[in-house]
Length: 622
Image 1 (cartoon, rainbow, N blue to C red):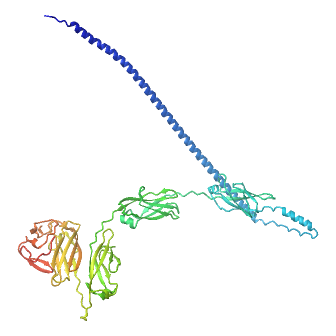
Image 2 (image 1 turned 120 degrees about the vertical axis):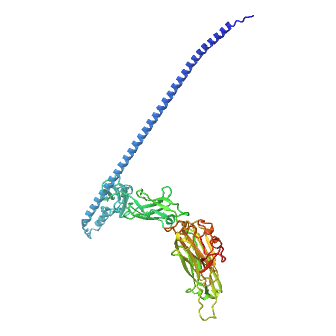
Image 3 (image 1 turned 30 degrees about the vertical axis):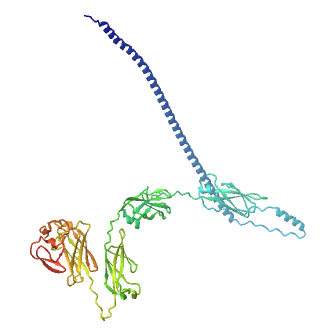
């Protein structure tokens, strides 16, 4: 058997394993030292960069501070220079005013002195003609002495006006060629007289503080001694603008959209600059809806009316009004107000009736007769225009409105028959409505010497006009709709329409009795009587006449429950309580037990038995 000795190899292997880590460890140590050195340099470079930035930032701050300080010093110097210039200007104005006053006083004193008496020259001797001629030539060469006066024509001025605009000084008593120049007190360019007067403009050279400025003018004339004339310029007080404390008030703090357009909102104010200009603004600072410029009175009071003028209504919401004092550039505190939405406008629901129904052409063309047209269902301020006259009338109250119509023309041109016409009703906030009507023209009745009595006019009544819900839901009460003076036997059509409540509309047709009368009774069947609370429109049509009226169901004291009627209101055959519906009578009364039931139809009592009504529809129930 062979033996394999592995020990040396293993030893070498382990030796190699031990030696390698030693070499690796030395290599890592050297690399770490190099890395640390690089990192240290990097940190030092970062510190140097940060230090450099900090120094630059500090230098920039110092520079900004220096510039700020220099600007402040410059502003202070400019302010000081302006104050100094203003003081010098005021001093010059004061001096000028004083000089002018003194000159005026001196002039006044000179005026009081009597003029110098000049002795007349002796007449020349007759024998010395040559000598006198020489003396005359000599006197012509000699100049007259200056005897002038000075007057400030500008009147009282302020120190600022004296410095900027100056004053006008008029010198009289001059001769052509005389030179006038400023000597003291004020300055200005010299002028040369073109005649007996000269005008010079003078200004103050320094700030004037006194109340008047004295000045002197030098007057020069060739061949004679120059003269100095003095005067004074009075200075007006430069009163500062009065302090203002403007406030405004409004006539109301709430107005409708149509109100701000039609009437506007009235504004009053006080505390503004007397006789100054004020701008009254309404709206917001970013979006005013109206502005008006007014002038305050002597007490600083204003009044204005702001209206909105636009294609669409101004949106409802909160707005403000304030006044701007233009002279002091001061705003008053704002006053708030609210614009509310306009109330919804009821649509037009109108009808017309002509009286008399028949008329002769002669009477229709007679303005004193004509016909009367009654329009029902109008509202106050409705505009009503008829096609016959073209005139427009305005309703003064809600309800019925009467118009008097006639034919403007020759009655011979009217033919027997219907004359159609229209009435147009305009109501602000809703669509217009046009009603059509006709006037029946009849021929003259030559076969009857007596007057023919006109047929009675049909009428429509609703009773009661106001009823409590408990009574309305009681079949023994309810509301009665009645028509009189219809054509006997004619169909009379009734309608009831609720306004804005969940109750089904009702309509029924009955025949007029022998006297032309017809009526129906309307009541509610729901156990909840409050469901009927609201307004109702009732309409009756009799032949060509359509008549309208209305009634109202109110809550009352007992508007709920079964209304004291056993809960079914006598309508058990209709399937019990059906809420606020409008079932018809007649066949719908099949649930009634046999027996007699008296119902008022067309003004007559009719007995009904059994489940069906052979006479058709009977008084209605909701």
